[in-house]
Amino acid sequence: MQKFTRDLTREIEVDGERLALTLTEKGVSIRAVGSRKPPQDVTWAAVIAAARSAPAAAPAAGLVAASAPEEGLSAVLARLEAWLKVNRPAFLATLKKGAGPAAFEKVTRDTGLPVPPELADWLRWHDGQDEDTPSALVGAFSLIDHEEIVSEYLDRQAGTDGPWKKGWLPLLDDFSGSLICLDTTRPGAPVIEAWRGRAEAIDAAPSLLAWAKTLLAEFEAGRYVEDPERGHFHKKA
Image 1 (cartoon, rainbow, N blue to C red):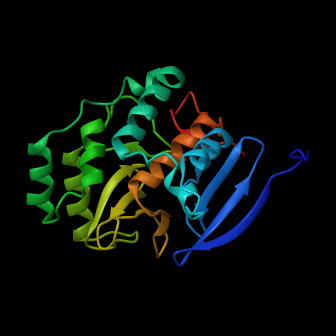
Image 2 (cartoon, helix red, strand yellow):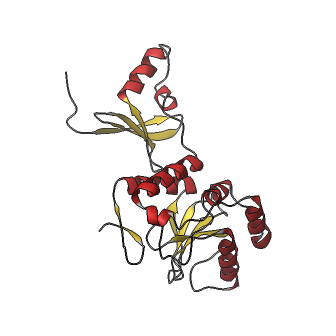
Image 3 (cartoon, rainbow, N blue to C red):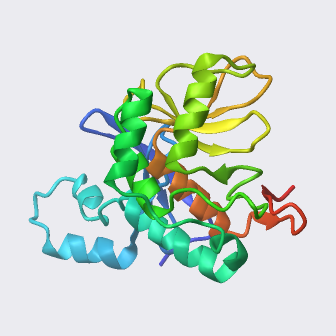
């Protein structure tokens, strides 16, 4: 019987969508070709169970259906909270309580933009953080609360030296002129990085959910290190 000595990846097409299947010692990893979303993993035990329970004529696409449903943003943020509690308790202590409907109404009223569902989930998690304690979630970027979202939005609308478009909602701020925002002008409200001094923003993730999942995965993999003096949390070189 042949055993795995290295991972094996093949591309297939299912209902017009190209999928990359990677066979490993633990199971099958499935992702859409070209997508930045994390892959869905199916253990060999799950594959065998699906094969035993499926009708004889079941299509190969049944493997995708057998994988676990995608987590929502609230679930990912709960996992991030648990990780921070163990690994960055001092930073977690700087985060404020979650926002409620009144905060969402203020954002909509003052910016003229509806609050995307994922931004509402984000603000329900934590409505910004304590500004008196230098600390950042990722890089030099800190969470901002709903009032700061409005303030930064209005300031940028009035004029800025960085890239800006009406419809961008600030999410995190490095307080040096750069922002991480949601682009509500595009489907899915992708996450973008608007860096001071750059003419164009950079696409960071197709959605806040995808951004948070990738960030958490990198945190869990130990790819970031904290600067104890400034509280920044940078990717290792």
